[in-house]
Length: 400
Image 1 (tube, rainbow, N blue to C red):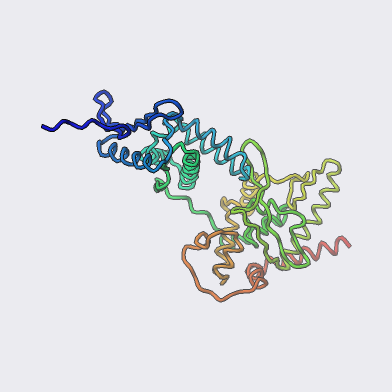
Image 2 (cartoon, rainbow, N blue to C red):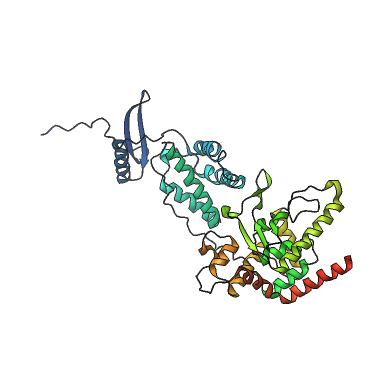
């Protein structure tokens, strides 16, 4: 009978633990930094343990570093945030969203695992729990992206050899995403007519007439309106950052854009500049000059969340059901598309990175000039535009 071959150094082993009812794969990396380094991971089946051992031995043969067998995920993500994310060029709002994802979701659910023990099934279960708790697709996607980036950094730092979150897909939410409300033409006209009496009328008008995001409209500065060339530059947005208050950052996707202003839009913005100068004079020394076009009564930035409440009150005064400022942007998109604006031009106007974000299906329309594009929206508001022009003319006569 041939003598049994003794397992050689560095070959590793697979064994079953009766007390834990788990299969284990153990890899011996020899002497590392003066001490023998072994890693051990548990699995449900022998096959899983054997596959892991084979992959670890291949990595060892190719000269890849031994995984970190001690550091827990919660410790590592804290290091990643503090030493990698915070010093980076990421916007403050982005850093805050990463910190929130780590603090509220990742650490409580997965932080107790050692990096080397984190597996694909843990991430799947984590996302399933989020879904079962009522989380939407956006939140689950954000949390998964943050986890992927953190584990990618662990690979860069040679603490891991693979990213278990890389190929995980976000599950479908239990409840469908709410459909953003659009305004009918009658509702749109009623809302803008009611807003005409408000000091923030110009803000609501440009959100619809140019399809601006709420933060972009709030972030417009005095010198963003180029009246000589009939162009409005969208260069920043105002957002609220947890722990830091209101902050200015580049528009979503870090894409600035320039939009053609119609004559009506230009007149309304000039009117706002005049009203802003009057407010500044009336406020006196208490005015805090932020260089923003639309401000509070003392010159500071408008709070995006308070604008939602303001529009709720505006809808009530117009006899309309609840709608958010985003409804104006979505209504602009639908109206412009229905009126024949080309897909690509609509994408650029809305500031979308991908045209798929702008439309569910592609449509073919003939090219359209900037001037016609800007006037299309105004032409759908004939009665309101006439009333606005009459109001401005009456005001000019009164002032003279």
